[in-house]
Length: 394
Ligand SMILES: Cc1ncc(COP(=O)(O)O)c(C=O)c1O
Image (cartoon, rainbow, N blue to C red):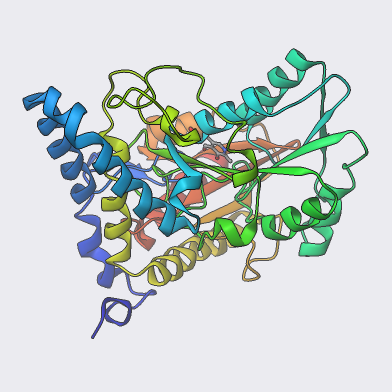
C-alpha cells in the first residue's frame, strides 16, 4: 500500500508518527505554522551537515562546492514551483524578494501601484516606501466583505486598475484572512491590460500546487519556511524573462566568486558576500520530506483538520468565515471570527495561561482566530484550543 493510501485523513492515530519529526517544545501547543513553520528533523539535520562542511573547510566549500550545490537546489526548487531554474533565485524570505522587486520595478511620478485590503502589512509598507521615493501613488482596493466567487474577487481587484496602474501586488494566500485568491485569473486579466503583476506567495508552496509559469505573473515571491517546511531563512523570487535585465539584488558583491564575472541576471544573487547558504541548499530536502507523505495527501489531511477547527469554532462561539468552506477558498488554515469584544490581549493570554500559540487577528474592525494545521497537529489540540477560548472569552 503506498503512502497516500496508508493513512486515513480523518484518523489522528494514522498521523502520530509524523509528529515525531518535529522537535516542538513539549510545553507548547503550536497552531501557527502559517507564521513561522518549524522545520522537521530531516530538514534540520541536512542543514547541520552543510554547516559542518562549511565550517570544516570554508575554501573548499565556497570555491568548489557552493555553486554546483546551489544550482542543484535551484533546479529542484524551480521544478517544484513550476518554473525554469533560470527564472528563480534564492532569497532569505518573501519579504526580501518583495523588496528586490520594489527597489527595481520602474515607477515614475504619477504611476500607481495597486494592492487590496487583505495584503500583508509589511508588503503595504514596502510599496508605500517605493511609491514615496518615486512620486508614485499606492492605491488599495477593498475585496468584498463576503467572498462569493472568483469573478467577484477578480472584478474587485480590476476595479482599482486605471490608466496610471503599472503594477498590481496580490497575495496568493492572504495573511490576515487565510484566503486562497484566484491569482491565475487576476494575472491573466492584468496581462491583457498590459499591467504587471507581483504575487506575494509565502503561504503557497506545498499548501497549493504551485505552477508559476502557468499562472504567468511578472514576479512571484515566496518563503519556503512556511508550509513547505524548509529551514528558516529560505525563500525565492521568480522573475519572468522579460524582467531579467531589470532585477538585481540590493547587495552588490562578486556575483560569482569564480570567475568573479557575472554573466546572467541571476549570477548577482549567487554571491552576496560571505554567508551561510545552508537554508537554500536544504530546500530540496524539504521538498523530498513533503513528497514522502504525498503532497495531495498532505493537503487533504491538513484541510480536513482545519475544517475540524472551523466547525468547532463556528459551533462553539457562533463564529463566521469570510468565504464558504469547501469551495477552494481555504487550505491548511481555518479563519473564524470571534464574538464581539476587544481581543487585543487574547493571543498573549492564550500563550501565558494555556501555552497555545495561535494568532488572533484584527481585520476590518473584527477579530478572528487563524488556526494553522500541519502534519504534527491533531484534533485533541483543537479541542484544547476551544476549551482555552471558552476560559478566555466567555
Ligand atoms: C502574505 C504574506 N506575505 C509576506 C509575508 C512575509 O513572509 P516572510 O516573513 O517569510 O518574509 C507573510 C508572513 O506571514 C505573509 O503571510
